[in-house]
Length: 295
Length: 284
Image (cartoon, rainbow over all chains, first blue to last red; front, side):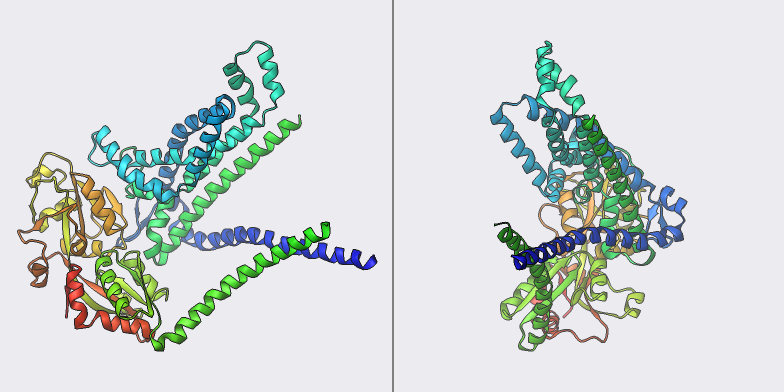
């Protein structure tokens, strides 16, 4: 008996160790990436000057006298993401309410799996469709010479953030205790009144989290926007060709050298800080949601 | 029962860890095998670079593999600048560049071997009435001095100027001939020859430039200073928008046997026919 017990303990420890190692690889990856980005991104900011880098309006990394101002990229990323949220969130939110509360079970299961599929479409496919459908459509509808623009990127991004918004919102809405809704219905409220005045407020932290998740998806997307945005480092304007933070890194990294390459790492660092910020907001929202439930 | 489950979990975990390591080491041994076997002419040749050279290098690669079925040929279309970086950093055997190497690149341990000459076609949408542009007009369009097609004999429409990314060999060739280095005002900056052709084919007001070897029926190549963008005119020099297709290797470093044999094949007279069938002008 004693033998088996100590064997068991040994086994327990071994299992612990293996899982610890596997778990640590994820943590180590994050650490390595963070440290690497800081080490390779900070020197260029020093050389260029943080004001010139963050607030410079001209990016000409390959000309004889290079200028490394990334304000156009930052603003484009911010505007692009904001635009995608403005279009994508209302659609995603209402869709989530429909799936979670209104839809009959047959339609519900079909719609959920379609949303799942939407999440699984590779971003290059979104880009391709944007390039072949949305860009020419914008050109015709607004009667402008070329459709590759911030607007095209916003439209593509707003579809791309739908799955994140819908899935997380649906989960939050479904977690609302049925008693809340029953009470509301018993007091004479209609079903729609109940959904929007009881269920949605009860799920608000989850819905907020879904929006933040969508923001993260939009700001980090490179491939699809690269194919529809035109990629010229202009200050952002709805019908102009623009370059995002992500595409600035992606389009020049392969042939860059010297200070140009270092500056690209600095752009990646700025993008990384944005995403860290978004994650911090997400965590704060999740925590608040948790506390509310405890009350 | 609990015990068995734990054992199973442990075994699975160990297998995952082992598999990860095995995968890593597996790759290394593969590479080793390739290197050691190259004397029997099995192995791999990796090329990386210019998207303009896609047709030429693709045709050469296919023909070469048909003759040497032990060798795997790969081509990574990334753009000339990327190809030059890749060969310099040892990430491929032969770099492909659609511009001549700069002096500082040669000083930094790279050697160029000109494979062929290629024209840069100035392309417009087939629906565009403009048939001929002079070099000055092209330069003015790209620097933003001419912004409407009616100024060069076309319909009243704003010109949509399409260019390539800064590392592109086509862009380098185009801007050096037209004298527009660093002064181009582009509406779109695309990252491959194919993207430029697709975009121009979809927009009647667009103008772009692309390798003559890659131009398809979807777009129309204008004559430059009344000279047609054709192979014969590139060869006799009357079509001025031209640049070389270059194989880039590391100076003083022997290629692997497979890569050397491909290099010899590509620069042989036999390959000339394949190169001209692919739309470029062989130098041999």
